Image 1 (cartoon, rainbow, N blue to C red):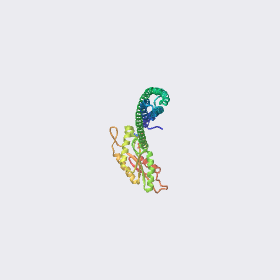
Image 2 (cartoon, rainbow, N blue to C red; image 1 turned 180 degrees about the horizontal axis):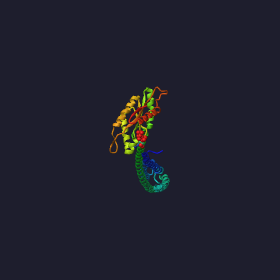
Image 3 (cartoon, protein in one colour; image 1 turned 180 degrees about the vertical axis):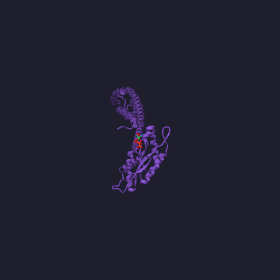
Image 4 (tube, helix red, strand yellow; image 1 turned 90 degrees about the vertical axis):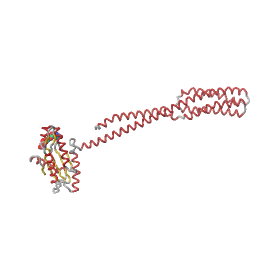
Length: 379
Ligand SMILES: Nc1nc2c(ncn2[C@@H]2O[C@H](COP(=O)(O)OP(=O)(O)OP(=O)(O)O)[C@@H](O)[C@H]2O)c(=O)[nH]1
C-alpha cells in the first residue's frame, strides 16, 4: 500500500525524532544508574553536621583530660572516658556516611588511614584513664596523648569537611543537570506529539481528499459513474417510499469528435467544463448530475415525471445552443442531444431502478441522434 506523500515526508523526521528520544532516554537512564542514584540518595546534610560535631570532639576531649590532669577525680575520669567513647562512636557513623556517599574510595582512603592512627591513640588512652586517679605517670602520658588526639582529629575532620563540600557541590550540579534533561525530554515529547498530530491531521485530510476524488469526475468536478450509482439506489428507494416518479436523462454533446479534431483536445476539455457548469445551473438542487463517459452526461431527477424531465432537457438544449463557448481564439457553438425516460408503475414488475431506466434513456438518445441531433427524445 502506498502511503500519502506528506506522510512519507513526515515518516523520516518522525523516525529520527523517535530515535533521538530513545537515545536520550537511554542516556538518562544510564547516567542515573551509574552515579546519580548514589549521589541523590546520599545525605550530605547529615554528613556535614556529623563532621561539624566531630570537629568539636577534639576540643571536648582536651578539656576533659585537662580537667582530669588538674584535678584527678572520678568525675573528670568518667567525663574523659565518655568523650573517648563519643569519638569512637562517631567514627563508625562517619564510616557509614562515607560508604553511602558517591565519593570514590581513593578520595578518602587517607582519612581511613588516619582513623587507624586515631584508633591506636584511643586504645592507648583507655587503660591510661583507668589508672589516672592514682598514677601520675599515666596522667603525664594522657596529656601528651591529648595533643596527638587533637592533631589527628583536626586532620581527619578538616579533610572530611573538604570531601563533603565537594560531594554536596557535585550533587547539586547533578540535580541541575537532571532538571535540564527532564525539561529537554519534556520538550522533545511535546515536539514528537505535535509532529504526530500534524501527521495524523495530514493523513485525515488526504483520506478525505481521496474519498472525495473517488466519487468525483476529475475534469468537471461532477459526480462520476460510481457516485451516480450510489446515489441512484438511495434515490430510487426514496421514490418507492414516496410513490413518486424518477426521471433519467442521458445527454451527449453532438459531433464532439469534430471539436476535438478541429480545435484540439485542451479546447474540448474546456468545453466539457463549461458545459458541466451550464448543466449544474439548469438542474434543480435535488437532481443528481454525473459525467458517465467522455462527452456523455446523466441527470437523475427525483419526483419528476416525463413532461417535467423533457422540459428541463429542452431548456438545457436551448441554453447550450445559444451559449458561446470559448475556444482558443474564437467563440464556438455546440449542440446536445438527450434521451429522457421515467419510471413506470403500470409494468410488472415496476421498472423502478437505474438498471431498468438506463437502456430506455439510451435508446431515446440514440433516436435523438438518428433524427438529426440537437433534440430531446422521450423513451
Ligand atoms: N477533450 C476531450 N475529449 C474527449 C474526452 N473524452 C472523450 N472525448 C472525445 O469525445 C469524442 C466522442 O466522439 P464520438 O463518440 O465519435 O461522438 P461525437 O463525435 O460526439 O458524435 P456523436 O455523439 O455521434 O454526435 C471522441 O473524440 C473522444 O476522444 C475528454 O475528456 N476530453
